[in-house]
Length: 141
Image (tube, rainbow, N blue to C red; front, side):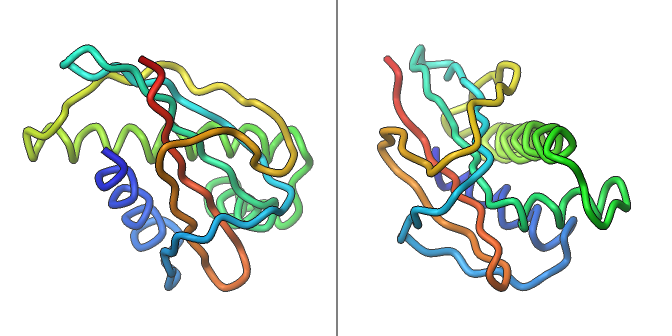
């Protein structure tokens, strides 16, 4: 499942942000905006997908969608929720097209601004220059 979410995240970097990116396994301990979306697989499993980014990454998104050079915290939170929705929604379509562990998605929720300290089963870090996006998944049941 993480594979399709990472693919959707990479597509977001390529087609929306239009910048080169790198994916790696090292999850950094920096201050991030953290949102999550719970997903329900058609096989009955539940997972939580976390999207956590530093403010510079989310400012890129805000510049892209809102043309704001310097967004306030509330706007960055809204952009975090929208980014989570776009990435996980895109991953849902990728999974459906591949007929691979299909699922439904719930409403995104903003958790906090802090170091990403949640338990997870799998995670990747996507970097554009020095800006970071953590994508993590945790099985709930």
